[in-house]
Length: 371
Image (cartoon, rainbow, N blue to C red; front, side):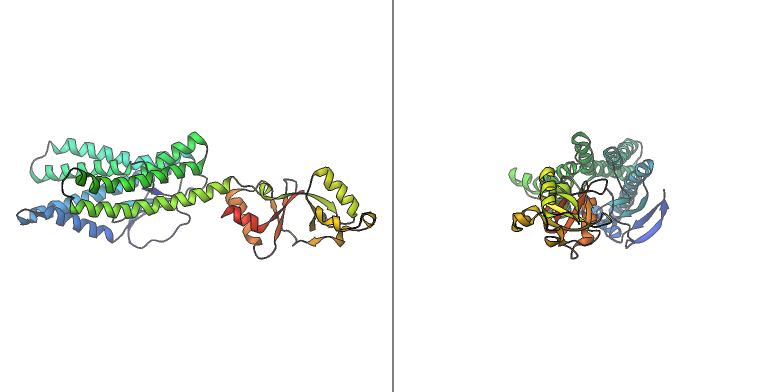
């Protein structure tokens, strides 16, 4: 499976070298998998078989070569799109490729994800074809390797996250709808369906058919469920929150405001705000920077006969200098703009592309909208 990380990290494991700029890391759990496969093939009705154990080790080796080629295909595809690949990690569950994916596009996400299963499908087909020309143990090992590659290809192609098929679903939905996070939500829901489907196939179908549940299949199904369901659920939660953020702009959360020089009177401010249909006034200092603000409704407390002589400073609430955000800021850009001001101010001035105040946004309301 391909996986774009949030930041590079040094993994535990054994570094085997580098290929296409990516470090190859072997996790100790892969050795456990090799032994499990060897024991599985060694155990038969007649007891423990050395020949079966040898076949199991050979199949395990070929399987992990296949997993490596699967991840190498992801790496080659990512490099084809000029993405930097940090590492290829081989694990108990299979493997994953970590590449840097700033500003991703649907096409490259889909192609990078599809490259892995397609590679295994080709290897599997070639191995099955070659097994017919080989005799004895060699033919048997190649046959098993071909079957395992086709299983690996088919499973990874299932349309749900965190599998490669889920990434392809994400890319297709994103490309068609233009909504990146909708693609993630569809892929995550697909992952949940896949997780349930694994349990149904391994446990539910045998029971419905009146047969016995295979213990090994049930264990594997529970293991796969425990990996796929949490990953898909986490992606669904993240996509829901991040998708909501993409539809929120600083201006949409702000009360309409207008900037007025500090030396204006309350009467002048009320007139200008009425023309601009503003509910807030941003008081501008001599250098044009926001120095304070007040709700227009607050001026009702000033007697009408005194409004023409009353300066704005008498009704102004001070602002922290520089406490402003762009009106068009949305998603992660809005988060980055807002975070530095938590604990320093209660409100922010929303400004247009020319730096002119157009709104006053409460920090608590921004936080609630982004959470």
